[in-house]
Length: 185
Image (cartoon, rainbow, N blue to C red; front, side, top):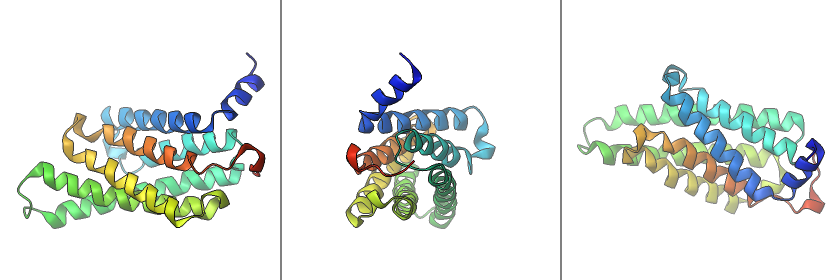
């Protein structure tokens, strides 16, 4: 199968391709975070998701190169905002919640909603096909729901990346325009 045939086959399955892209970037983020890249935890997940999913959007002709690059930058900025918010919230809550698991669930919910809502807003600014309050709210809800995985002590929160990035990718993919309406690249 030639590269052109493979790209055409991929373009015919946009939801599946987008979700696989989100899951792959989530798995790579979890791997990088788990092997000691924690000193770069403020950058790795946002950049990984932004670059991989921006490339997916570009290859599927849903984004021009400049849009894919801005999506990658927005992904990093939104991850950093959510990450710093989670750290601040952890310090602010302190010992007011004695149950450590419950504390992390609350923090994951709040940070997941914030990160997803910010990135959904940036996505809506970049892509006309995503401009809908319902879509932004759906993404924020998915971000919060998957963000709660942080508190469930599944591999120290690493599954969070797989679930959050996969869910975000699914929400975006469900908003993709029909093949005949694609206007980018």
